[in-house]
Image (cartoon, rainbow, N blue to C red; front, side, top):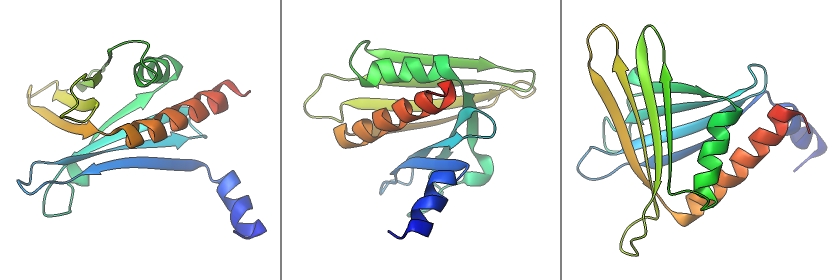
Length: 153
């Protein structure tokens, strides 16, 4: 990495981490976490699978997380609690995020889902994906970094 590359990475206003889970049935999904320095938050987007390795970003679900949201998810990733449930309500829609630990050696250790119910139509969109230990470790590191940056320490 050159000095210029390192410098641009350090000053980049947004950084993201996505967990892609396409499957052969076509009902997979992706959940993407983006740290937005300018807005002082982490934006979480979820999209359903729309093709073999394609996702419907046009119809994505988005949530804006602050410190309390990040803390709840981090506590679950660290094993301090079995589940984090986040609920955001607005005039347009209600959005929910769940991260659950599963103690089943035959399955992924975490299960993540994000949903949105439109206020006017009551239609519900939902994306659910399994999360491996490796993905959870990366996400935990990202959440810790986001909290540190948001606090300014």
